[in-house]
Length: 456
Image (cartoon, rainbow, N blue to C red):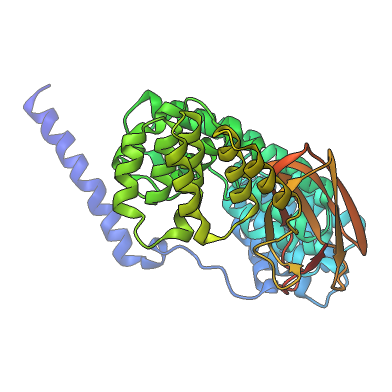
């Protein structure tokens, strides 16, 4: 390219911006975007002149049902359809249409209500949106099946729906969602395996662990056994995992060894009981000596664990000493059962028989009660003589949704159901000492009042 050609090219590049600048100075209105006028009628005229403005169409759809015009329903839907065709992938178009429809829900016919729900369905796949809208939409539609269909496939969404189902008396849906949540937790756990953050796994541990959650506890122990975690960083949920694993001998139990040695967020008594479960009597004694001073009530379960441990390895003198050490916390059914076991192992049948007689005569004593009623959870450790027991429950309040209870025996769900007036629950069990729990699943009424169930 010659020098002359290059100069012409450079001057052309300079002249074009100069012309544009001059036009901008002389005609400044060309540089300003036209603004939509306020008011729905003005916006409608604007849309006729600017038919590609999907935002204007959405705003008309949002406000149309507030008009007094007899054609407001047609305007509401037509404006939405126009905006949807112009911007099919914009959520704003559906949001405006749905918002208008929900505010005027009771004025809509069946066909228009279906249109609103069809438009809302894709929006509900977003977890944040679903979390804000599932309860108001239930209030309007009473269509729980629709909520189930449009809910995002997440653990939180299932938990929200489960809680809604139990409060509203949809007990069949509650049971289905309860099982789905367990499966979802396991799938979420498997997806998080290998994480360096133990709390990413522990946050999946439910507040109440029962035997149906044992696969989750087993998986947690496997992960603890596979790699080293910083014990100090673990949340308090690790204590629930350890207590459950010790109580039910969930394997691999050796995975809790580092937790026993370092402690972290766990109580000393939990560490000591876990050390016994690992047959590390030296560690158990060391923890006991530093933590059990003046805490007989808290440490009584450890003392009884230690008594059984010593009896099984033939040190009956030490076993009897631990039985006596636990006595100030109360001669409970478990204390009598352990005392009988130790006496029988020590070759004292008459003493063992006396303990058994007192154990069988012990009256039922429930803890966690609100007087004579269950308001959340009631527990009892009791010797059962037959293969079945019967619990009588009575509803003491008037509410359109009845109480729903779950009855657990040794952490396994043994019976459940609603209590509309009075109901007797037959619970299958085996003769022997058992831990029972009556759990009121919906402890609050829909108005937030405390629910109560009489237990006898």
